[in-house]
Length: 475
Image 1 (tube, rainbow, N blue to C red):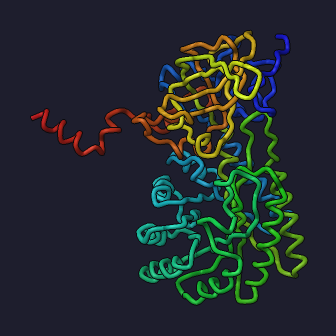
Image 2 (image 1 turned 30 degrees about the vertical axis):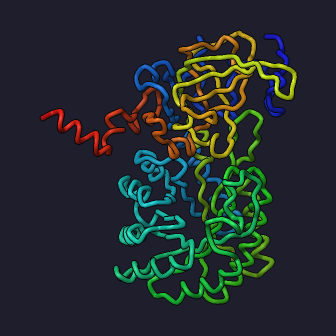
Image 3 (image 1 turned 180 degrees about the vertical axis):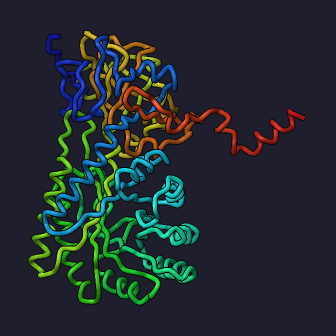
């Protein structure tokens, strides 16, 4: 294939691929490859067979890849902590991608589980996790959620505001238990990420200001039914820059040392937010690199203040779930649009698929970039700049903003979008009354349904008027 010219409508980061059929290891699960005929295969199962059995859209999870990433992350963080004479407690951030099946994998692999709602807590408990290995987050935890967490002997509840101190102490007292708590702190570190993904800035809903921490910790310590475990920070999500984590560690160790004067502070939770590659242009640091830099910073700051290195806690989610999955779509309508606004006239190909923002809200929410590839066959056609869009009644219903796809892509082809394991299923909806897709785990040549796809009956299950009409018609 000769090198094609770049389309002037393409973003600067998007290069014309030398081979449209190639799969970059940076963004695809480790067990995805192409057959001799060019069809994508995951762990020995062809995508055409997956589409025929389960339909599209379809979330496809490479189970061995997920397990390997979870274990690799745990080992990397534990090794980094050990290198500075301490231990690491690794929580999988369930909000990224959580089902009962996935929670069982996390349990088997020896990770803890971070949940952010009563529903996620219910999933963790249903999967058989011991309460001591669960951490509960949330900026507005209900009294019921707090009471349930205490009843389940959840190892740590993260206090997000002053009012929660009394609420958790009351729930623990009513059950005559001592509840472990962490205090979420806004470190003020402004991680370079999307505005809505930066979670340590002062003007946002999570956590408490650094200046307020000593008084709040004293208040926590005044309650005999609360055990203060340490402070917690989360500077953002999808972060590539190492210096944000290093600066956060510096500020938090300073605060940690100050709190030691008033009592024991056994842990320091540094959160998660480690970025992954969504396109071939991305270059996320490895988790090992993140862990090493954080460990060095923690040790340096503890030595400078003459305090022992605390046990460290982390909450990775995206870095485990994100790269382990892809979404499979069926191509519908295709149109070529001549664009001349502010540039030389050029054509953008609009490729519509049978899903969209209801199964991947991230491009609409965060302007997130994704990649795509023709999944059902090889193609020797020229690259054409395409925009993959969904079927919703929204102009912002974009799945992949810019990608070079074969010019001969046609209705009925299968299209795959990699790195959709984090937050796509979690954020899915029934917008325009679309049914949410199934989730399939593939391992060693076997595809297993993890979450069944919704049906129209599911859409009407909570519609009271519909149920009344159905009942009347049956009479």
